[in-house]
Length: 122
Length: 122
DNA sequence: TTAAATACATAAGAAATTTATGTATTTTTG
DNA sequence: CAAAAATACATAAATTTCTTATGTATTTAA
Image (tube, rainbow over all chains, first blue to last red; front, top):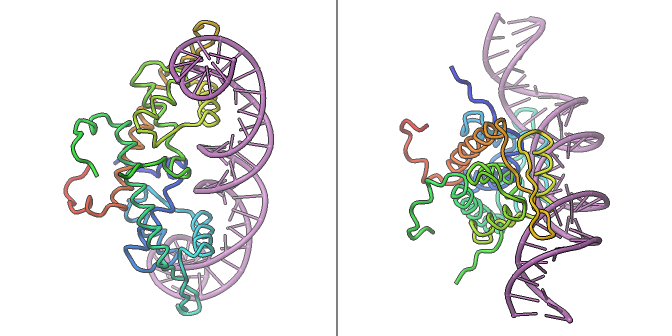
């Protein structure tokens, strides 16, 4: 049986931020570990966000006022939830739209068969 | 009317290589300047490959045996054509397939409307 | 004749991510 | 019940990829 591995590293570059913003927009609030495991499940293991990439990015988003945090104690462990601020919601929408547009553009190059229709694309 | 500018820088990371490999596979051979202008036209200016990114990448691909070059003199100017080697063709196919798969996966997260059907997706 | 386009190239720096490492608690499994 | 795996956070060094800046030179368009 074919076991689908992870994507090669370079391909994921630049996608972490829009993915995280999308999940936060969708779920309302999430904690770091939850984001990594959710992405792993959603992608069948093809995208595994490393902690070394995730936490610094979340901290940066917080420093920029894009997210705020809520801490909760689960037993003796701390869990840090991240939520989009109002500005964060605007930025999330913009980032997701841009990424979807980017994928349409890129796909038109990589997959010419998707290029047949020139209708009223968004 | 809304004029769509270039994409933000970080979004393009990791996409240059598959794009270049795809164009070389499709066109047979291309020279550097031709690649940048072709991509600019194909994407309506949304993706503008800088020379600082392009030439080092082409040189790397050559050093790795993925492409070979053919030089031609156009007047007093040199033009360097790049062609995929047999190994390069295999790598190009793999890289393009992986990227298309990656886009399907990413789109399923970013655009839930594409997620309604849970049928026998590839 | 001057600016823009064509055509190559490299080097320094920034940014995003990997790899490695660390700490600690909780759950599962043999 | 002990050990392994999962949960949950974090940071630092190194790598990769790309931008920005700079350089040279020819050809075409204004």
